[in-house]
Image (cartoon, rainbow, N blue to C red):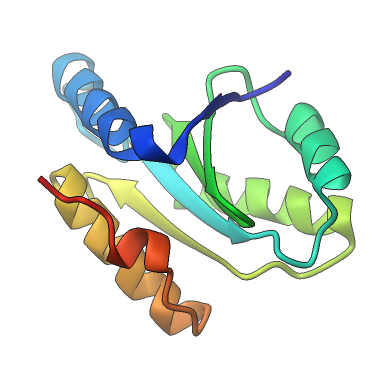
Length: 138
């Protein structure tokens, strides 16, 4: 399977790890990774699973809370994340609600990225994600 699936309860730790790796390995700190949010509520689970296998790379991470999917795309800028989102749209033959934030452009730490993502989702998707609103930001 392409992409590695993590439990939603490990989302913050995954972001912490990715930021730590970027700080250690990416001297230019130019969009070290991008988080892509997609609302898959209108898509059947078996079709979602098939799309993940065909679209994502082995280095991509997947976290979901129900039909709310978050993709951590290493060394991918917002343009590249949009290409991935367009691939999902084409695969499902639907225009999915989505949002992207990049590290470090949109936030220098996990809390800032999650807050920016939640704010962008509420504006662009007209949706307040309880999974992010109630996220334990320590």
